[in-house]
Image 1 (cartoon, rainbow, N blue to C red):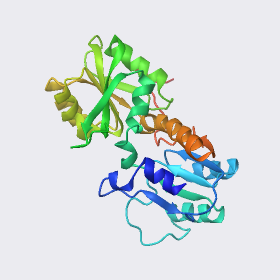
Image 2 (image 1 turned 135 degrees about the horizontal axis):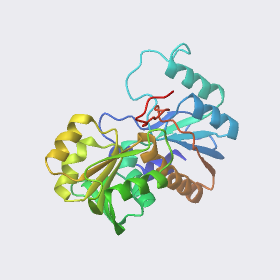
Image 3 (image 1 turned 135 degrees about the vertical axis):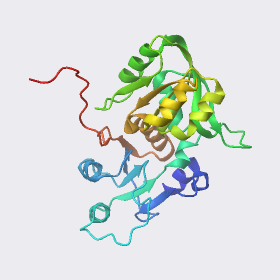
Image 4 (image 1 turned 180 degrees about the vertical axis):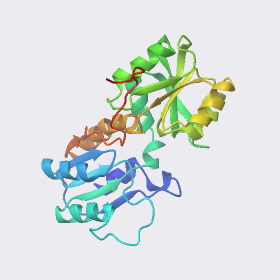
Length: 267
């Protein structure tokens, strides 16, 4: 199983700061059922136990930054202990899955119905279509307001929803997308000449300056919602390549849980 995942998402494709690959578990242990998740958190660990998973494949690393202890009195330590006691292995595919073709942003683009995909920031010298983000075109032009609604109904539902920056009546034909935090790639979206760019975790000042500078319209969705579509592709690959049962977690692990846009005061 580890070898198959490493072939699909080679660790060498990950950023130097990233921590990917097998985190817990014996590489040669048999795997019959896999749970595919965005985040390895107590709720998804409990779900793995409920469905009888032998392995969790997560997008976000559990141990991205160094720790001095995995004692059960710590948040991450408790998760590690729960996994070991339940004999559940943990594997991470993060930035190596982001740049893969197909990868995280391909699945996001597919949810929006984008066509003729190409990388937003290609891997230099790569002829296999790898790179961060994707650029595509809509089947039919939409206004920004229509595209925002389209994204809200086609992406997984979260309290965050989808918000947009730009003229609501702006016509959108070409769209760039990037699963996860995509503000480092605002200049790439501008340089590509797309009409809109959808990603997550956009911040006030970069967005304000981007729009003032005449850049593409922006759509900001929940981080989890932009990466959840990839789990379907991951699960399908594991079923085909390994013959295992692959379960996709729909547990919303986005930290934002309440959204209220009402302008009138509550009674």
